[in-house]
Image (tube, rainbow, N blue to C red):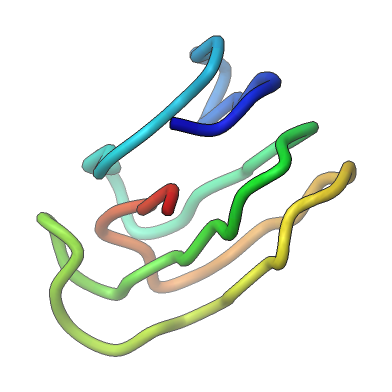
Length: 71
């Protein structure tokens, strides 16, 4: 479990962990967490890794996007 907040397409998760599936072809992520975040092209953490963030604070847009995994 990460400490902090993760907002995916307007929905905020406090102390996020695991996989979050994304509805639509793209994702906007605003993050302030101490864990790695990986965006995958398919749901359930499958497919190609589209973007990987080592944690910290910021906002990204990614496409294609099917899921976001916090580890």
